[in-house]
Every structure is written in C-alpha cells, then in structure tokens.
Image 1: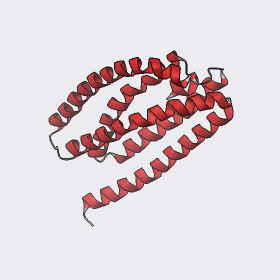
Image 2: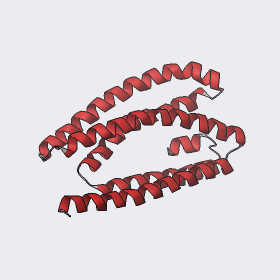
Image 3: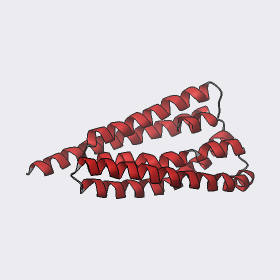
Length: 180
C-alpha cells in the first residue's frame, strides 16, 4: 500500500473515531438540554436549532469546495491566499445574510412566538456557518485529519460544557444558543 493510501486510511480511521465522539457529545448535549430546560424552552431551542441545521447546508458545501481547492494546491503561499480570500468573501456574504436574517426574524419571531433578541442571537451562527468550514476544509484538504477531528471534539465538548453551565445559572434558552 502506498504511503498516501496509508495516510488516507489512517486519517479516515481518525475521522471515524472523532466523528463518533463528536456525535456522542452532541447527543449528550441534546439530552442534557431536554432534561435541564422546561418543555417550552426545549421546544424553542429545537426550533432555533432547526434554523441552525438549515445553515449547515452552506457549511457542508463550503467545506467541500475548499477541500477540493486546497487538496490540489501544493504551493503554501497560494494555499494561504486561497484561505485568506475565502475568509474575506465568507465574511462579506455572512454579513449580508445576517442582515437579511435579522429582517426575516422580525415576522419569524412573531410567528414562532420566540423573543426577537433570541432569534437575533441565533442569527450570529451565520458567521460561523460561512467562515468555520473554510478552516475545516483547509485542514481536510491538507490531510490534517488529527487537527480536524480534535477541532470537532473540542467544539462539541465546549458547547456541552458552556450550555450546561449557562442553563444551570438560569440563562434558559440563551445558554445553549450562546454556547453554540
């Protein structure tokens, strides 16, 4: 087996393990929030998370595209340029999408019976949905699977820890949204 294939198989095993841990931590997060929040607060959280999951469509697409471009580039200077230009574009697009979201959140908050400040706070996820997959795609494209897996696990563990702490302190639905 060639060196590249060994590295790819090894990286795949690392990602398999870390995705499993990531998903387990997210399961514990959802279970914890279901136990710690009231029924109505958990329903609000589930509704806000459905919006976040919709934004995940953009994240997955961006990460796949960046992975493709980074994996075919050997020049480190060009790699940095690809990442820098992508972050700048991602920042501009996420700002515009966030403004549109804030406008749409006004009737959305009324229809869903969710406080507008909570809807607006949830909209901040847009920035991570457009910028975070750039770095993850770069890690994946350069076959830095350990770093990518560690990134996912630390993110998920931090979200779980901070959400539980903030809910315990009485921040209700704001806790898990801020932690996210």
